[in-house]
Image (cartoon, rainbow, N blue to C red; front, side, top):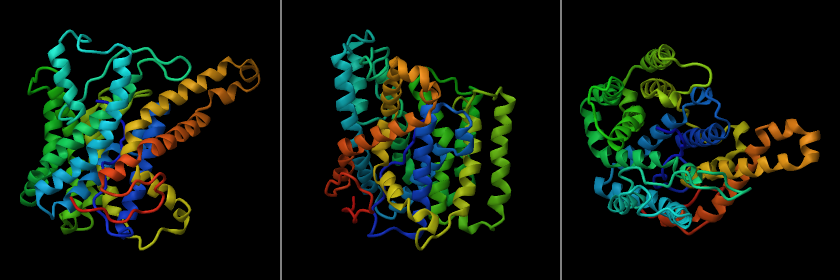
Length: 391
C-alpha cells in the first residue's frame, strides 16, 4: 500500500458560508494536503508520525458522508460518485493516452482480454486502475517510470469508493454497536497481519488492507458526526486515545521500525496510530465562529486547498516528479554547481516549484471539480463557493 494524499474526496453540499466547525476541518484537510506533498517530495519517514494525513482525511470524509446520509442513501452515493469520478476520468484521459503513445497496449502483460477489462477501473475504480511500468521519461522534463507516479495516488480513490458504498451499512452498524463497529477494521488488520485468511492474488488483499488500515478512522468520523462520541464522558477519549496511538508505535518498534522506515509498510501500526491521533483531533474540534486572528491571512489558501483537494491529490505526485526532474537539470549548469551546491541540494526550492506546478494543475484541471459539483467553473477558488445543487 502506498501512502499519498491524500486529499479528501469532494465536499458535501454546503450552504453559503462555512459552518463554525467546518473551519477547523478545513484547516486539518489543508495541513494534510501540505504534509502529503512534502512527504512525497522528501520521503521523511517521521512526517506520517508527526501528522497522520491519511487517517485525518478519511475521518473527515466519513464525517461528511454521515452528514449527507440524512438524505436517501442511493441519492447520496450517486452524488458522491458524480463528484469523485470526473477528475479521475480527466487524469485517465491524459495518463492512459500518454502510456499508449509510449507503447503500452493489450499485449503489455500478455493477457489482452484482461488488459481491456482492467481499463474499466479507470472509469469505476472498484479495483486499482492499471498502468504501464518502466516507461521512459521525457528527457529533462519528466523522469522515468512516470506512469507509476501518476497512478500512485489511485489506491485512495479505490478505498474511498468502497467506503462510500459501504457507508449506509456502516452507519446502521455504528448506531447499533458503536464500539464493535469502530474496532472491526482493527480486528481485520490483525487478521491480515497474521495472514489467517490466506487470500490469493494481490487485488483483494490490497483492498482489504487499505480498508482495515483506515476504516476505523472513516467510521470514527461518522461517529463524530452522528453524535456517538458526544455521548461518551469527556475524559474517555483523552484517556484511551493516547494508549491506542502509543500501542501502534510500540507495535512498529517491535517489528523493526527504525531510521528510514515509515508506517506505510506496517498497516496494523498505522491503523492504531491513526485511530488514536484522529480521535484526539476530533475530540478537540473547536467551533470557530470566525477564523482565529493568526489564521485569517491563510483563509484564502485554506479555502483554495479544500476547493481543489481532489485535483491536488490526483496530480501532486506527477508535479513532484516533474519538479525534481527540472531541478536536477540545474546540476548541469557549471556556475551553479561550483558556487551554490547547497542550494541545488536543498529541498525547499524544489518544494516551491512543486506548488507552482500544482497551481498550474489547479488552473488546467480544477474546473472539473466545479462541473462535477454542478457549479460554474472557477479558475482560482480562494473563496467559499455558493451552494451547489443537491445530489
